[in-house]
Length: 418
Image 1: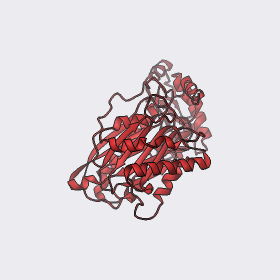
Image 2: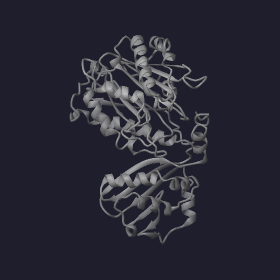
Image 3: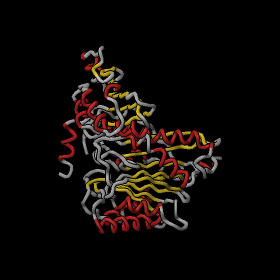
Image 4: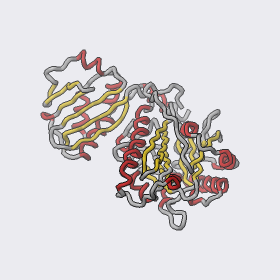
């Protein structure tokens, strides 16, 4: 884990409120790191519903497979959760039969500590790929955590799941559901191996709203598309990407209505707040990109369709040449042109316009006549850079978040297993 906090870290960190039905505890189990917490246990009251989206990697981790199976399960526990166990330092990915055995043993230890069935235990792991996870290290630790868990451990929880992150990532929102106020809390980890596909690294959302598992699943599936799935650090999708959401339903006691349909009009304000938490967390991940010194927003407009705009934006955001130019504070629009052209989407060179932080540098397929090198160079010194590309072909628009690519990224990943 890096020791220097990203210069892009948020300066305003929210006070995380208590959510009825959720208790948290952390411990140092010695999974990989020494002298820091690396295990999180979240306890959830009976009746808590759960939903999840996961990596589309064809080489998923054992915990991802475990969670998928539990969400698809049958019986009285389907769609319900009582505990979440998260560890950092070891991804329990590409570990064969040993990985499956580790997840089963971890769930058994957690179920015994919490007093629930293994079907109600959800797991997530992050860290090195290919090394067996010794689940016996959870024995005794989880029982202690179950006894000591409290409702106010949000920052400690966010710190416990960090790997190369330089700061804990949390977000919160309070909104009315019916006539009652409900709360949404979220945490995430991630700084490298990031181009999410259905989810991102590890992220967990909790609310006291009384939502069915089907409604939660619908919110997640839609909510990730323009937040976590519109994010890239290095173009690499993790084997462990997991986003889980939990609804304790405790706000029902205060008059919050039970929501069983995603189309329920009473859900409108909640949906906006829920997506806001996802957007906040995904931006924090971009701000903590390994070695990042610039937050980059790529906006593509005038495309034939929104999906086409997304592909072009991702092509720009994932280009090492674009990202290193930004790191060098060079408004090299030629690299942006290259990325647009290679995306495989409709584009017309002679209609293309490009701007950096609101200053147009290219127009109609050539350098803008009013281009001023000094003005643009000054704009590139800002900590946030917006690259806007206007294709002039249609109404399709999208935006993607990323960061620059610095020498520190190589240092971090060259030494990752050392």
